[in-house]
Length: 313
Figure 1: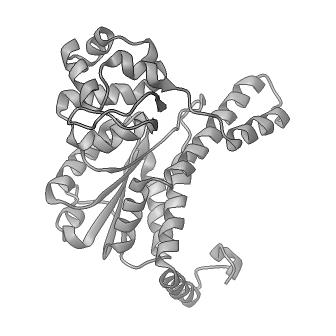
Figure 2: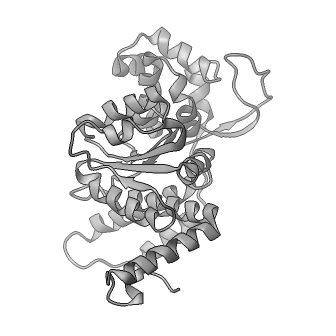
Figure 3: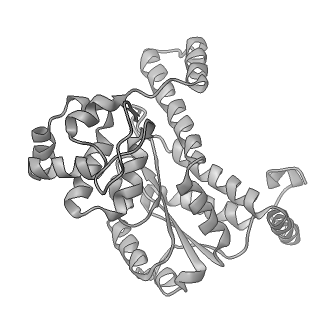
C-alpha cells in the first residue's frame, strides 16, 4: 500500500513524517518492526494485515482489535510520522497499476479454463501471478541486498525448514551448494539445533523457511539466533508477521490464491531469485564451484546425462 504525501514537507522531528512524494507504508512498518515495543508491534502487525481496510478503521476499532488503548494507537500513528489516524487514512492511495499488471490482465483475457470452476480458477490465476510480481519486486529492496550479502559472505550457511516448508528448504540448500561451499540443511535429529546454535555467529548465517500455521520451534529458534547475534534471513507468508521481531531480513510471500491449500509458488520464486542474486554476486566463484560439483557428479555417476545437470556447460 502506497501513501501519497501531499502538501508541504514537515520538519523532521522525533515523531515527524517524511517529505512530499510517496512512501510505502508496508515497507515503513517492516523496517521499524524490530524497534517497536510489544504494543506497537501488535498495532503494526494489525496495520500490515489490514492495509486495504485501514481507511475504514477508527482509533477505537483498531484499539479493540489489537487489545490496546485508543490513546496508544494515536501515539503509535504519531511515532511513525503522522499527525493522527485521520491524516494517515487521508494519505492512503491505491498503488498505481503498472505495465506488468496490465500484462496480467491481458493474459487473463485470453486464458480459458474448462470445467465448472472457470471463474474461480481465473481469480486464483490472477492472485498467483500478482503474488509472483510482488516476489520479484522484493529483489529491489535494501533488505534483499542485506540478505544476499549475508548468504554470500558467510563461511557457513545453515538452511532450516519446518513441516510443509521442509522441501523448499532442502531444495534451496541443494541448489545453493552448487554455487558455494559450506551449505548445510539442518535436519536436527537431535532436537536441539546444536549444529546451528553452537556455530560461530560472526562467520555463519541462517535461512529459515516457515509459513502459517508456523511450527512450534520456529520462534524458539529465531529467538535464540537473535540472542547470539547470528544473521537470520526469513522467508515466510503474509500471515506470519512474527519474523520482524527477530530479523530485518524478512520476505513475506502472498500465498493466498483461493485454492484449497495456499500456493507455495511465490515462496519458490523468492528463493529462486535469492539464489540468482547470490550467484550474480559470487560471479566466477559460483561457476568454479558449479564445475567442481559437476565433476563430483560425474565421478559418482550421479547423473544420466549432462542435460540432467540443469544447465549448459
